[in-house]
Amino acid sequence: MQKILVARPIFPDVIERLKQYFDVDWHQGDVLSVDELTRRLADKDGALTAGDPVGAAVLAAAPRLRVVSNMAVGYNNFDMAAFNAANVLGTNTPDVLNESTADFGWALMMAAARRIAESEHWLRAGQWQKWIYDGFLGTDIYGSTLGVIGMGRIGQALARRAKGFNMQVIYHNRSRVAPEIEAELNAEYASKQDLLKRADHVVLVLPYTKENHHTIGAAEFAQMKPSATLTNIARGGIVDDAALVEALRTKQIAAAGLDVYEGEPNLNPDLLTVPNVVLTPHIASATEATRRAMANLAADNLIAALGEGPRAGRPPNPINPDVIGKARS
Ligand code: 8YV
Image (cartoon, rainbow, N blue to C red; front, top):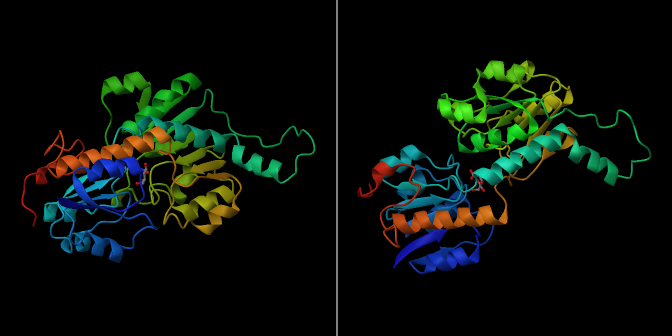
């Protein structure tokens, strides 16, 4: 039987599925250190990860490893150049999380715009004595302008929801989406600068790459409206968190909603000291149904990539399909 490592606690029934095909080493404790991950992969043919960094050194120490299946759509934890050089397949879990993640983007954006978390903390602290005409004034969603940066599948799902709020949708992306998608979403392509100036609510849904590092920082906050909100459901590092703290403190923008952070789970401690930011612990895809779908898709990818099951040799979500069938190097 081929050997696999499941590097994270996941649904036990998915582990049972994997055991039908593989000898499974299931790590259920704290996140594995790179050294420990390297050690545990030394004799494995495949692995299931969820955000664990896998680069050249890890692959070099695991000569049998042929596939690493990430339980996430984002795979910035994989060094894909190293995967390609070693002929190791990477897979991810796109699509199954689009709607849950888009829902959550709205939840965060609305919570930030309408100051839901901030006012709840105030209420819980026993400070509510009377109705105040200008208490917790926020920014409207209905009829406002939504600015989506990153118009992939999740960005599109998010933009599709704007119709019911009678919003104008503008977007920025590496390239324009097809005219029929623009028409369906009633979305107008804008330069980043134009979007930042015009949007009442900016939502980030782009993948993290070296080029996208600090896409939003001090210069960008300076272009946004003082009434605007910023929501990040993409990846930490796309926003300069220190500059965001400053922009929130000085009311350069009104509020922010963050699900992802630079250096998470150790976030910039200053974020905890500003009231006008809603902070959640990377849970945009966290519904029971969606996390199950992601875990099962990650298992499907692993099973198929290692030549087992009904799709043997044809994993549903290869990131670098060109390495399929090539000998490990
Ligand atoms: C994952 C995510 O839960 O899919 C992604 O890219 O950000 C989340 O849905 C998280 O990355 C853990 O792998």
